[in-house]
Length: 615
Image (cartoon, rainbow, N blue to C red; front, side, top):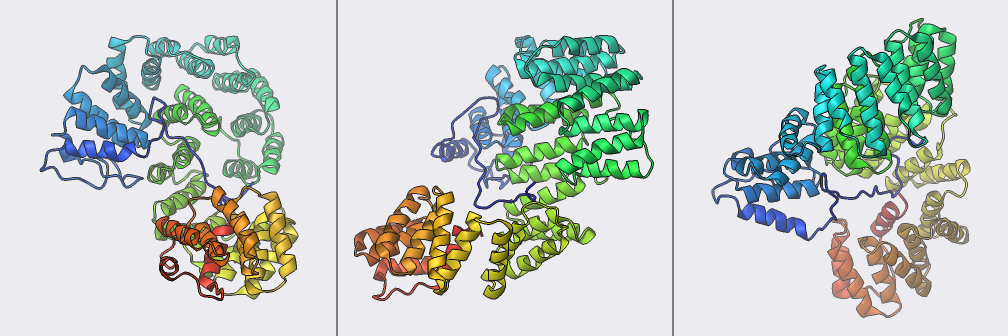
C-alpha cells in the first residue's frame, strides 16, 4: 500500500454535482450567481468572508447571518444554488431554509432545503422537512428513509419498519431498506423475522456478504452463537479481505472458540494489508489475553454499520451524493463511528473541500485506534487549506509519539517538500528511511523524494546517490529516470546516458506533459533546438495550462528564428501566473528576447525539475 497521500503529479478528478440533482460545472455562471445574489442584498448589508456556519473552501463570500433576515427569497435561492454547485452543503442548507421561510409553500425549495440539510448532516432539521414533504408526497422515498432512520434511533421500531419499507427504489436502496428494516425488527424483538427478511432478499452477486454479515451480527446479539458463527464464517469465506467481515468473524472466534483461531484471522489480514490500526489493536488485545466484544451492540449500531458499509462502498465507486446521505445517517445513529467519519472526510477530500474534511477529521474520538490516521489526514487537509504550519506542527507531534510511523513521516515530508522547505524535508525523509524494516513496498519513494530535497537544497552529491538508489530499488521508474537524467544534462555530464534515460521515461509516460517537456528542454540545453521545438509543442498540447512549459516553448521558438511565436508563448506563460521569481524573467524576454548565446538560469532549471519530475 502506498504511503498516505503519496502522489507524483497526480490530481484527483471529481465531478461537480448539485446536491440532489446532476448539474454540469459552468465556471462562467458562478460569478453571475454571486453577482445576482449580492445585487439582491440590501445596500446596507455587510458581507462576511465565511458562510453562516463555517469558512468557505473556495474563498466565496456569502451573506452573513444578519443578512439572512433581510435577504429576499430570490437572493437566498441564488446563494443556495451557488453553494450547491460548490458542494457546500452547510451554506446551501442555510440559504434554502432562508428562502423557504420567505416562500413556505414552494415545494421545490422544500425539497432542496431537505436534501441539503441531509447532506450537511443536519438530520434533525432534515426530519422536520421530510415530515412536511410527506404531507405533500407520501411516496417520497428519501423522506421515508430519513423519517424511518429517526424512528429507529428513537426505538419506534414498528414505525421505522413501515417508513423504511416505503423507501425502496433499486438494488442499492433495496439492500439498505432490507438491512435497516431488519435491524428495526431485531430491535422490536423479532429476531426470526429480521433474519428471514434478509434471507429472502435476492439481488446482485455482491448482496450475500452484506446479508451474511448482518444476519450473523443479529444472531450473535440474540445469543444464538452457533448460528451466528456459521453466518459470519460464510461471510469471511466470501471475502477474507473485507475489514468489517474480518473483525466480526475474529471477534466471534475470540469469545466462542479460542484466541489462536481469532489471531489467525487477524494476522492473515495483516499480511494482506499491514498495520491497519483496528487489526493491530485487535491483535494486541488478543495477545494480552482479552476477548473481543461484538462489532455492534444494538439495533442502532447495526443499522449504522449497514449505512456505513454501503456508503463507503459507494464512495469508492463514484456515488458520492448517495454515499454522503448514507454516511451522514450512519453518524446520526452512531456519532462516534470512526470509520464512517474517516469515509466522510475522504469523500470531502475527493470533491476538494478541505475545510469540510478538517471539521470531520477533528470529530474522530481521541481514544479511537483510528485517531492517528485522522490526524494525518487532518494535516494534509490543513495544508490544502493553506494552513501548512499547523499541519507541520500536528505531524511533528504524531511522529514524536512514534518515530517509526512511516505514514506520518511521509505526510510530513510531502508537506515540507510542497512548501519548498527542502532542508527540512531531506531530514524528514531520512527519518523515514531509518524507520524502514525491509518488508515495505515502494521504499524507492523515500530515496527519490529525499533526493529531490537534497538537490533543491544544493546537495547534489547526496541527491545523486539517492536517485541511483531509487533506481536500484525500482528499475526503470519513469519519474526517477526523468529527474536524474535531466539533472545530468543540466550539469553537462553523462549526456548520452542521461538522454537515453529521459527517452525511456517518455516511452513509459508518453502522455505526461511534464516528462515530455523534460525531453524537449533537454534537447534545448544541448543545443538541438529543432528537436526541442517538436517535443515542447507536444508538451504544450498535453499541458496547455502550465506556465513553465509555455515558457520553454517560447525559448525554443526564439532559437529557431520564430520570434513572433516566441513572444506569443512567453506572453501566454506570463498570463498563466508563473512563480513570482520567474515572472520578471519572462517579462524581460517579452521585451528584449533572448541574448545571442543561450544562457539558461539555474532558477529555470530548478523550476523545471520541481514541476516536471514530480518534485
